[in-house]
Length: 395
Ligand SMILES: Cc1ncc(COP(=O)(O)O)c(C=O)c1O
Image (cartoon, rainbow, N blue to C red; front, top):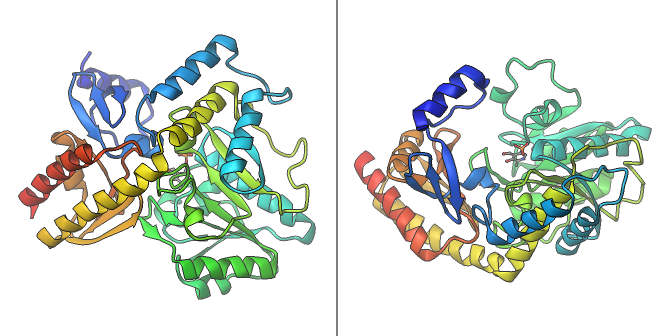
């Protein structure tokens, strides 16, 4: 079978919810993937952030293999060793917390929304303020929390109780707070929104506002979490702990898992037995893969590598900016970087793909470059060389 054969199968049997490249990826190792016809690609957007420690990391493979031999699934009305160990690991790396597990980012956001509603239910508080240009997933409440109308079209009526403010505009948040407000939800670096970074001042003010009004501060770390920015979680750059944190993507090293992390400073017992559940959430297979991600990040000092390689890559991209006037700005933290262009970026990302480099384009003009934390200077040089050639031909 070749790429076209698989594309034909899709046309006939798979609902067309994705804009797809007619390329079938069948193998991955570190920062490289191969298609079914044997073409190799340098992957600087691995799995939309899922393969944050590289494809098929040996520690993850080993953990999954060991676990499938023992037991693949344990229902959540029984104790599951790996889930308990994973919750402890997440808590140890973040803040004193307890964790609820599910299978994806959107489900983790749904869990946070349910947590917040339950938290405010006795006082009739349920409104959540999220940010314009945010992205929180595709299930109905996560979709509603997402502050981009293009994702809402055709799915109305949306879930009630969401209001939208502007990132880094504190007054726009404050204006929306009323007696029904229960939480503020944001990504500290908007990914899909075009790599926009929240300022320290904005986040500090949000923290103070949440304390004053007894609101929950919720950080969506689905893309930023697990080390990509050079710290375990991006909030650690700000010196502020959220009440709730949402994780997925790199958390599972490729296995589907999501998590809602609730700070122990929340005094109330909010999600009590029977109020929330997930059949698969945190099952032994996914939890083992996730424990292996923690082990690999620690053993291979990937936080340090993400920090150093992030600076290296950003400098290289800044060099390209001095060469090409179509580059307006390079922004981001660690290995979560965006290059804003003055022209359409899709042409650029497509041409990069033809030459064997996978990157993403978001918001039409922003190239999203988020390589695995295991990336090296050699691979960055290769990737930047391809981007340089493509920009040279396009400018
Ligand atoms: C910040 C953020 N939150 C939530 C999600 C939704 O995650 P999932 O696709 O696993 O449901 C995404 C997905 O891209 C995301 O980037």
